[in-house]
Image 1 (cartoon, one colour):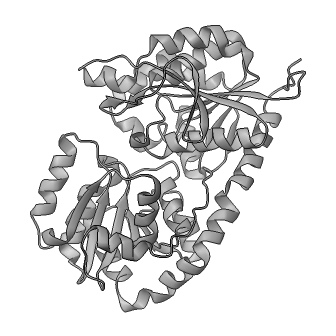
Image 2: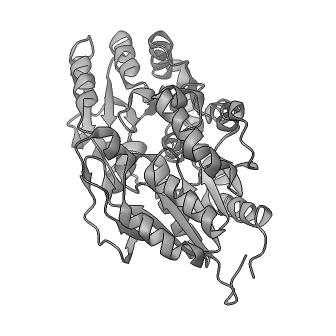
Length: 401
C-alpha cells in the first residue's frame, strides 16, 4: 500500500469543501489536514462550489485551503437547480482520469453527486482501492427525498460504486443500520467524525451578548447548522414560541439565501417570542466559537443525522445540547449527562426547552462546562480518529508494490 519512498498518497474526493455545505465538507478538510501532519501525502480533489456562488480559488493547481492541500475545478454554471446541486465538473473528471492511479488509496466523501460518483467509477477503472463516506445519504429519511431519482441513481451508478469500495465508512451504528435494507456487498466500518478541540475564549459570553446587544442577564439558545428542512428549524421556532422562556434569546446561525430562509424568518415573526428570535446568518472562524462557547445551550431537533458534528462541537465548547433521538450522539449525551433528548415534535422540543432553562438543570450545565471538552477529546479528538482511519486503510486494502 505504501510507495517505495515510504510516503502514502491519499486522494480525497468530495463535491464541495464550502463551509456552507455543512459538517461533512469541513470534516474532509480536517481529515486531510490531520493526515498531512502525520506524514501522509493527502490532497482533496473538489469543485469551487460555494452554494449559490463559487469559491474564489485558483483552479487546476494544488493550493492550501483551510489547512488542507486541495485542487479545485470549475463547477458547471446553470440555472437548473437539480443540475446545479449535482455539481457537474468535466475538468475534475478529466483530471481524475489522468491522475487517480498515482495514489495508493482514495477516500470518497458523499454520494448522489457528480464528483463522488464519477470519482468512484474512475477509481474502479484504475484499480485504486477507495473508501466511501455516505454522510447519511443512505439513511431512511434521505432516501425518501426524491426517491425515484435516488433509486434510479443507485441502480445505474452508485450501487456498483458502493459495492466496489474497499469499505463503506459509516459515522454511527444508526447510520449503518438504516442502510442495511439496501443489502450492499462491500465491507463496512463505523468510525465517528473527528474534530479539533477549540481554544477556550474566556469572554465569549460577553462578546456574544455585545454583538447582538443583549442584556447581561439574557440567556442564549443556539441553533447552528444548515437551514434545511430535515434539521427541524421550523419545529424549533414553533416550539420556542410555545415555550417563550423568560430572558432567553433563540439565536439561529446559518442560511442559504433561498426561499426556505424567508419562510423561517416569516415563521419567527408570527408568534409570542418573535422579539426574542435572531437570525445572524452564516458564521465561521472565531465568531463560530464565540457563538458556541458564549451560548447557554445548543439545539438540533433534526429528523435525520449520520453523526451530528455541530452537536459534538457544542459539547466541546462546554455547551449542553437539546437534540432528537435521530442524532446518533443522543446516547453519548444521555450517558454523560450533557443535555436533553427530545423527539422531533413541537410539543417535545417545547418541553425540552422549558426543562433546559429551569432551575432543575444546573447539574447538566455544570457537568458539560467542566467535562464536555474532555469527553469529546477522548472519543472524537483527531488522535483517536486518525488511528481508526489508518487501521481501516490497512485492514481493508492489500499492499501495493
